[in-house]
Image (cartoon, rainbow, N blue to C red; front, side, top):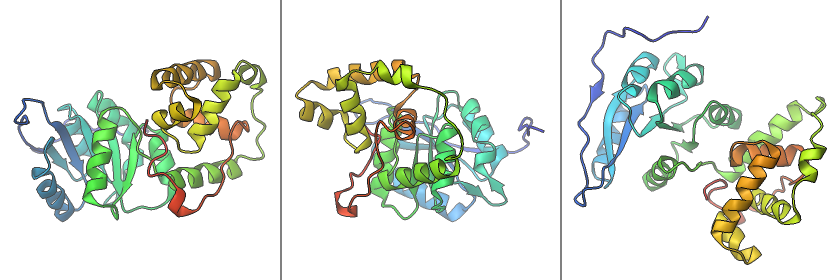
Length: 257
């Protein structure tokens, strides 16, 4: 039976949004974590970071969904909230947020959990071992609609998912793949290597705008919604390969354009 989170009798911690000196609205952030000390630390860090404003805090599912209805821009949430698993209510949280971007900030290093969070609608994952600067950059990236996923984390999760489903026969997709142009196949391969739009454009001697047009065409032809689905599709249908690379050569982010 699906849980409901109506009629919550508590007062969520909320703050009035402010604007920067230039008049640009700050990114309004809802923090969700079961550890109040961690919440307090994040609040202090963000208080000194231009353009970021904490507008609410929650420590469990009911509080998080209630606060999400205040329409924050970004929701930062841990995977484990005491006895609760945020994966169990992530879809409800996103629905309540009505457009809020969800960024998972967690100490859980299981790539399968990270992939599941993204499948449920999270825009990215940051481990709690990362620096504050990394977190701030991730917040700004997901706020603009970009994914924030570490390449090695994503590759490990997908490789494990493919091993688990290796015995399953995939649906015939040869007609869709046959419609791809040679240039579109090049774009897919470069995307799988972790290249951003600008880097792909430079290698192919085309504009970033043209790269965007190629991606839109690829999404349409293969019936995928975004880069994550495209990469999963590409690996599954041998349009790209997961190739181990030295850690020093791995790009910081795979999906940020």
